[in-house]
Amino acid sequence: MIIVRKNQLIFNSQYFRCSLGKNGLKYNKKEGDHCTPIGIFSIGRIFYRSDRVLLPKLAIPTHKIYNNYGWCDDPKSNLYNQLIKFPFNYSAEQLHRNDSLYDIVCEIKYNDTPVIKHKGSAIFIHIATNDFKPTAGCVALQKDDLIKVLSMMDSKTKISLNN
Image (tube, rainbow, N blue to C red; front, side, top):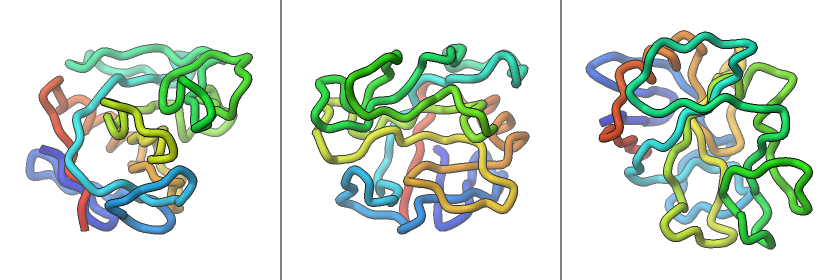
C-alpha cells in the first residue's frame, strides 16, 4: 500500500517527498477545486513520453504518450475522466506537454467506476516541479523517485490518500 500524507509518500518503508493539490486533501472533491481526493484507490495505466524517458520493465502496463493524447476534464462530455485523442470538442488536458511534468503519468483510479460528472478528473501521479509546487489535485514526485516507486508497484498496489 502506498500511503500519502501531507507532502510525503511512503511505500515499502521508503519515504519520498511529494506535492499534492494546491488546496489540500478533500473528501468531496469537485472538478477544478485543486484538491487531492481522500480515499484508497487502485493504480491504473502508466503513460510515458518515449522520446524523453526510458522506463525499466514494470509490472503495470505502460503506454506511450502520443502528441494527440489528452484526458477529458469536461463534465459535458460522455468521455469525462477518460483518455481522449485530439482533436476533441470538449475541454481536456494535454498529456503530451512541453514541460516535463507529464513525461511519466500514473493513473490513479479515482472517479472511474462509475464516472460521476463534476466529481473530478485526471488524478495522476506525475513528475513534480523542481520546487515541488502544488498540483491541481495530483500527487507529484521527483522523476527518479517516481520511477523507483513505479518499479515497486504491481497490479494489486493501492494508494491511500489521507490527512
